[in-house]
Length: 259
Image (tube, rainbow, N blue to C red; front, side):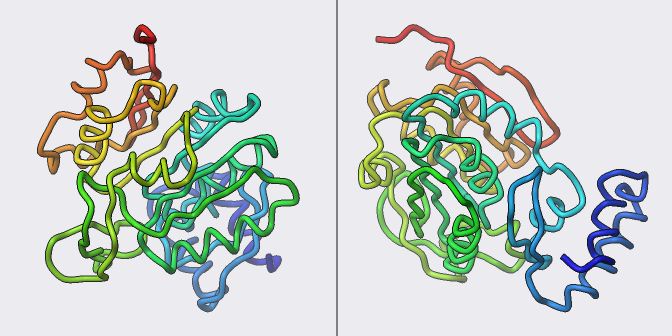
């Protein structure tokens, strides 16, 4: 990373310049220095290529983005044969950092419908010296199989599935994707799909055997006003409890009886 860009990133992470209007100035300066090219950087010690046209990647350059959520998931992913599923993987920040913490006998399944983001995930995981098996499923999870449209009008970090215009993508039930990826268990799951969480999770938990239920879940809830069904209530009824809550996500663990 160029020296000036590295200095901007350090300032964003370690000084008050990383907040408010000053942060917007840092981002604008970084974008100008990057000139549209990806930036070779590290996120919490893990090598990564960051593209500053992406909201999540900009945040990762200037802060320990979603550190609480990732640390919560990591606790469930350090054992032998661990499996991490990322629904709405975007450019793969969670995939990149968590894969670096997992053993080589573990597995990561990244589900992301945007081909450009899938390419970024592939580019990033190639930087890891040691990594688990990583499967990139370039499709969307839903409550049924078919096709939908990915609305990218709000940027790469806020893409929405719709039934109208946009990028046409294949959709499959989550259980179908997981079985195709060879998953028999899930140690931890993260889901961030801009208000589509209920369609995916509710159909999955009604259909999948308990042996496939994840031990831990990080679920974005800030778009729950778009839900057709209360996914939190359903997860509670399945035996999950809220371990913690951040500004954007619920951190849930399975605390119910194993049947």
